Amino acid sequence: MKGGGDILLAIFAQFAVLSLLAFGGANAVVPEIHRQAVEAHRWLTDADFAALYAISQAAPGPNLMIASLVGWKAAGLAGGLVATVAICAPSCLLTFWAAKAWDRYRETPWGRALAEGLAPVTVGLVAATAWLLLRAADVNVRLGAVTAIAAAVAGFTRLNPLWTLGVAAGLGFFGLV
Amino acid sequence: MEPGFPPAPAAAPSTGELFIAFLAVGMSGFGGVLPFARRALVERQGWLSEAGFTETLALCQSLPGPNIVNLAVVVGARFAGARGALACVSGLVVAPVALVLLLATLWSRFGADVHVGAAIRGLGAAAAGLVAATSLRMAGPALRKAPLSAGPLMAAAFVGVGLLRLPLPWVLLVLAPVGVLIARRRGP
Image (cartoon, rainbow over all chains, first blue to last red; front, top):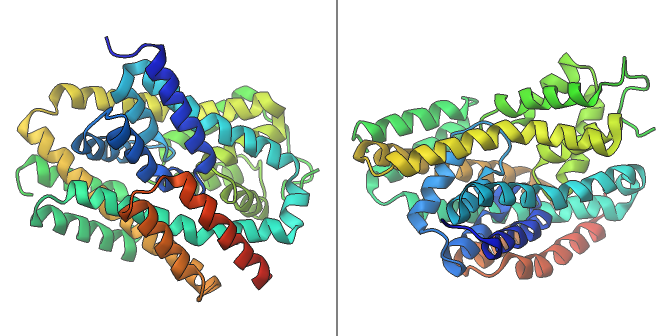
């Protein structure tokens, strides 16, 4: 049986900190999740990480399930639940508090500067997430083409991404990529 | 009264109604729940006005955490305090997390199958492309807002975290104050 208190504590500590750093959503902290879970703790391999990220994208809902899945891989169901609570709770508490101060917050020049100043940093972090996933996923030219076409479809059309993901999974299943 | 909410909501929803509404939102969106949240909260329930949704979202975007989760906190807290916030967030998260853990369990059982493994690899390649498109789409508005400073800040975050694999807290500790000070000097 995987698990035990130590690993659950480690999972909680990792994702609780990342919760407060996730400006722009969970995609901004995916590189850090990867760095800690794959490189530092060795809870899972690079290929596992890529597969779990793909699974997290294939399900509906908010963009935080990669945390649940990494926790699950590290310590089973308990790990998945602990990671889910940890990635949600700190940022939710902060939002709960900030919503009460909403007026003051919104009107101050510093409030605006905070939102605008962090935006470019978030873009760079999401690009880093894309880079990390590209390196893990595109192991041959045909998979590279799938990535390029998926990016183009998402960039230039309003097609529901589920279609893109479904077609790509189908191509893989039938041995075409 | 916080601005942005309709002055007199038809009837304050109960925690049960909040839970059910966000349960539906959580199960409806793939790779982006916000359009579904807007439809549910503004058009179907009338809990927020159109402007109220946009303002609330702006607040949520400037705080850490997924926007939609923060939105659930704000809406829940507005109508039913801490219990309402808890009802909205758990409604939003519970079904997708259960589903994704089920998918992962199936993957751990059948992932060794050649076809399933290949399907997951195809899925992973497409997911990488979707994230790349997201980052490119986010880059446009940020570059228009601050043509000189946004590019270097994006590049620094990308190189520091993506290429050099530096710990995120250190990168943010350096880049966040720089970005905020530049935005503050520029003014509104």
